[in-house]
Length: 229
Image (tube, rainbow, N blue to C red; front, side):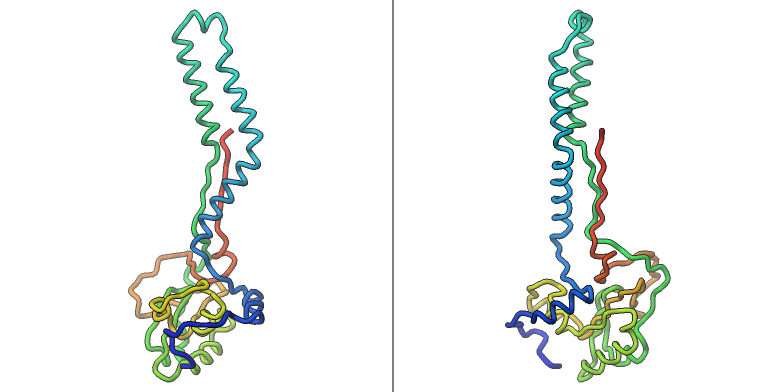
């Protein structure tokens, strides 16, 4: 290998590598993204609905000081009126329903396939998942494995070395030694709606949708919002 997998990188990726990565759709994935999306969604809801909430709360507050003669003479009607105001106030306090997830998915269906036999012949074992498949090379064939995998799969997937994944921060800016040791030598990351499955895994594979790659459909965080009026 060109470099020990446990060695720490001491230099930042070059501007050219970062620019090429962005052009190819290769971006880092952040575990904080879902929480940030929910927070931003809540702030936007407050911004867009703030005027409506203040107007409605003022009306509910004012209605609590308006009584007719019939309500004053019947204490049960007062209780009913109070309960109605409490219900209206609750709907104003909790008016927005947000539904989100930590990632998107792509429809794969039965479009699952193992890596090419010539690629598997140089692979000691696999790890990861179908939409981010790591190939662990047999001794001394890391460079050849990358070239062979590119020949057979570059038309449907990003085929990259471990060094490129680390240099371009695909998995974030900091990877500890334990994480680096778990990475394979070559990654197959589909652009098309397919999945690279390991024939050694136990099945059956019943999932219709998959995730793990770097397509927009998988990186975008779904967010649904509705307001109770």
